Image (cartoon, rainbow, N blue to C red; front, top):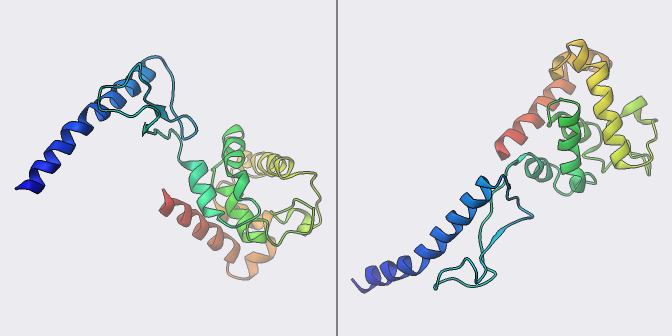
Amino acid sequence: MLKRLGLVFLWFLAAPVTITALAISLQNQEAGKKASISQPIIVSNDTAGPNTIEGQVLSVKIEDMRPYIVENFLKNTTLESHSEFMVKTADKYNIDYRLIPAIAMKETGGGNASPSESYNAWGFGNGSTQFTSWEGAIESVAKTLKEKYIDRGMVTPEEIMPIYAPPQMYTGGKWAKDINFFFSQMESLD
């Protein structure tokens, strides 16, 4: 009985905090603002009820989980810190956000096995292509995928493989199978 009373008491203490956070979130939405992981909703003395703590993070609304999915997929790889840029660049070129990280994982383990300072995690030019930065490489890879594959109707790994990795046609299509496997790993993180 005392345990239930304690829980009820805690609920009464927490309820104003939750209601305040909801009200702030709704005000932000009405004002056209979007909270993100880098912009948590903070309670201040001006908006807080009597049972709140100034500066306490009440809630976080993540609008787009894809950068976090890619970051988790690329955990402990060279490209992990470039996850958000990959998603933004994929959106810029209107390609599947999973394609750039999946190819990088297939070709070089997410950049870990790419030639030193080549910034080529995608095996471009059979690994001989040199880029000047990871951002430049991601931009070039996305643009190439869009112009040479997607715009020509090749949107699935099976359709991309004959041109991107032609020898794989004679090995049972392992490249496409691996890319699809990496797609499924990112989907399971969703």
